[in-house]
Length: 71
Image: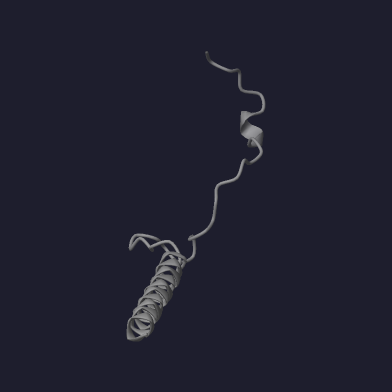
């Protein structure tokens, strides 16, 4: 009967090691996700007042209304 309990003990230890490894891997994934989600890296040349402003289509200035297209 000693052999049965030894195999069971080894199985239990192996399962604990597997669960511990799985837990560590999940923690590493969460940490990596937080690092990636921290935001886009900021370029040093960016001016703080214009960061995030996107160009939009604007109306044609009145001085160009009567201009003839040159193709």
